[in-house]
Image (cartoon, rainbow, N blue to C red; front, top):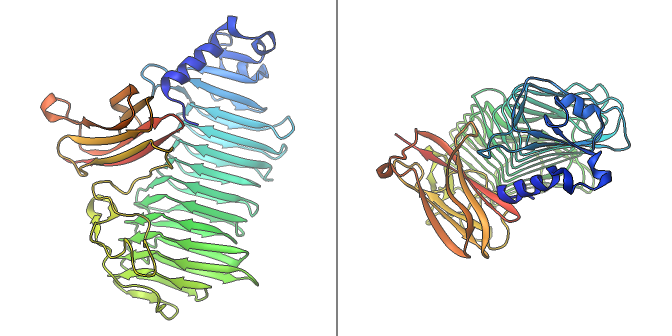
Length: 470
């Protein structure tokens, strides 16, 4: 659960007050630099929790045992501990969990785990270097990155769950290990024109679940080898080659590719190279492949259990290559809201909002004015509404709703993760509200670019991007 800043700071204050610690807890919680001068000496103490105050730390510690490495936010809240780099080498414990919360890295994260079956969890951190798993034997039972900004190349291995949730990646991600269960949700990939946003290496993964992600600006979008899983509600657009490529040798149980939008790529919208095992199903339905310079879909292995309700429109080389087009597919203009601004929602008049016999086709429903960003699942009654216009040359209206009186915060960040403004904070009454940001008349005009609007409420958060033009 994502905690609002005030409750989180109150909790930290309680934990950091020595008088409040029970006798057993005092020995297991330490603070840097109050108790130990460096992070490494604090880790060497085998404390259960190492708190680190906000600031720059010119050290590259090694995490080797179960611990919670917890950053203490500064003022403003986006200031966190910044380490030169970090190495994780689990050497002791029985299924230890190594947790790092709200700690930033200026350089690389290196994982070397050849000995201890363990779990690694990162939360609410900014990692500006590369992430490399150099293990020769995959002992990591699971690895999770949640609510993180990851700027450099990422290479991960896990003999179990590999979870990327509500993150932002600015470079390439490669996942290896045949025993990996990959889950990527509510995550944005923002490329630099080269490489594959998310790919797998080696044998097919046990499973792959990719849902509600956005990929833009790479050489290719997804290139996934997996024997089962779900690939749904992803938006992959504006890449130099193919959008979504799926391999399976063969499909085991079930592989479903449903309600994705792959558009404006220079290659094919989709590529399928999947064989189907005995008793298994491969479903390809409800996807949009539009305005790609290649085919809507290229079947390099022309087999599937069910193909229907896919929309192939205005693809330069044609709708389908490699097998006969399905009579249950469509060829209708999606009527995207504003693809030049990255808004691949469907306009109110789109025939794909409720196509006969199909329902919604593609990843996004109606909602012109919101860019194709990532919005996590919301708590009942707490909702981030329209954020727009986008692109905007003046004031941006931010609508949000509360189910009950509650402490919330609406923050705006630039592409580097820096806090730009906080249009709403504190306790607000239940109901629908709207605030303005980027008001030129008040002298608050910001530079042109892409900004992230984040709405935090009890139990979760929602995010949306907005484009500001000169």
